Every structure is written in C-alpha cells, then in structure tokens.
Image (cartoon, rainbow, N blue to C red):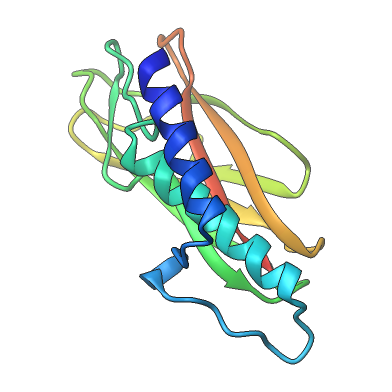
Length: 166
C-alpha cells in the first residue's frame, strides 16, 4: 500500500509539473466568461486527482463481510453544476446477505449533503437505493463522504460525491 501511494504521489507530481491537460474527457478546458486561468487550472487539477485515485485502485474497496453489492460506482462525479441548483444522485445496491436488510443510518461529512433512503427492509436479492442531494451553495470543487450503516454490519460502507459548482 505504501508503494502504491508513493507511486501515485510521484505520478501526480510529474503530471502537475508538466501541466498535462487531463480533465474530464482528457481535453484542456477553455476559460468561460468569468473564469480566470487559475480557476481553470485548479478545476483540471482536482479532476486529475480524482482520475488518478480511481486508476490507482484507491476507489471502492468492498468490505469482506459486506451485506450489499453496489450496482453503481461508490464515487459519483456531478461534473459542473450551477450554483444554488441542488444536484441529486441515487446509489443503488443489491442485498446479498440472504436475510432482510435495514439501513440503520446514513451520515454525511457536512450539512450541504443530504441523504434519503427507505426505512423498510430490503428483501434478500432485492434492490435498494440511497439518494444523495448536494445543495451547491458554495462555489468551487467539492468532495463529500457518505457513510452507510447497515443493520448487523459493523463497518460502514463509504460513498463519495464530487463535482464543481460554478
């Protein structure tokens, strides 16, 4: 793990040093009417970090005793969203535990991220969803953690939402 983090750091350093244009779609972003060069470069840097994190295998690592199989990625990128226009995404999962599964709690890293889920138990081999809404109040990049606690599972499942508020 230490070697992987070292290589990730080294790789990121060289990409940023030589200013490789690796954003969404691997193209250099053009400046909008209100964007400065610093904002455009910062946006590309954050997206680069997100892409490198996923490629390096630091993304979703399912727990060995997990009661669910996630049908969506554990990280959702909203991309560019307008300020004060909330964005919503549904993380879907399948109950693989063999018994009805209840979501005990969903905790977010801040009040700008609001979870919603069904209180009813999810039957075995059935689908469930957790909806996450980001309020998009503050300008700039965001990366928020969401912890999902299932009944009878000690370790939380961790989800992330990220994006850029314009």
